[in-house]
Length: 188
Image 1: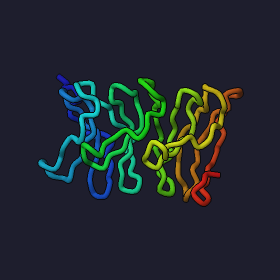
Image 2: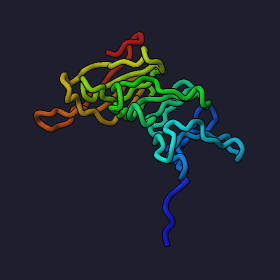
Image 3: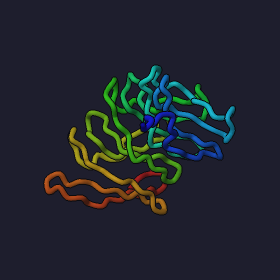
Image 4: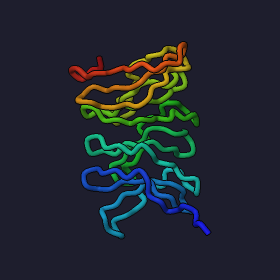
C-alpha cells in the first residue's frame, strides 16, 4: 500500500543561511516554516490560514534578505506576502485584488534589489508589478494590454539587470519577447 504524501517540505529557499520552505501537516495544511538545520530550530513561522486548509505558500524568493512568497489567508485570496522569519514579521504586503478575490502573484523575480512579479488587480487583468515590500511600494509597472483581460505574461527572467518575459498577442495567439530595464530606479 502506498502512503499518502504528507509532511513533505517544498519550495526550499535559502535566505541568509536560513532554510525557508512550505510544509504540510494534517492539522495546519501547507504553511510557511524555517530551519537552522536542527530539530529545535525547525518551526512553523505562522499559521497564516488557521485550520487544516493551510495557506499554501509558494514562489518563495529572497530579495535583500527578506522572504517574499504567495499565500492565502482564507480571507483575501492568494496574495503577495513577506517574512523576516518571525510570526509578527510575516505579513501580507498588499491585497492587490481587494477582498476575497485573488491577485495570484506568480514568477516572483529579484532584479536590482526589487521584486518583480505578475498579478491581476481585477481592473487591469494580469500585468507586470513590482514591490519594495510595502503597500505603497507595490505598484503596477505597466499596463501592456489595456483592459480587464490583461496580458498573458510568462517566464520572468533577470539577465544582468534586464527583465525578460513573454507576452501573448491575443489576436494572433503568438508570443512576443519583451524586456524591462531599470535606469536610475525607473523601469524603461
